[in-house]
Length: 73
Image (cartoon, rainbow, N blue to C red):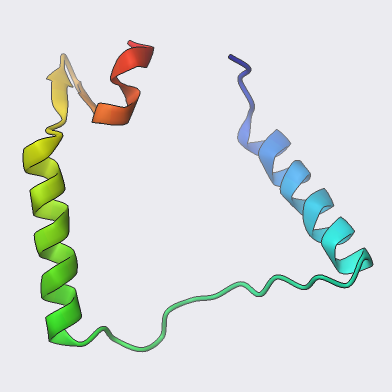
């Protein structure tokens, strides 16, 4: 598996955005400015808690390992 530095990823993203702009596909950077309504926020929280119950993270020494990274240990 290849390892990349943050600078390499940043440069690749810059080139990809430039290429997409060149062919006319503009990707907007979106930031959520509207607050979520309480019902949707409660639903998101419930789904996250259910996911944690089904796929709990594991503490190894000083590190918290998330379920989708367990096979990398």
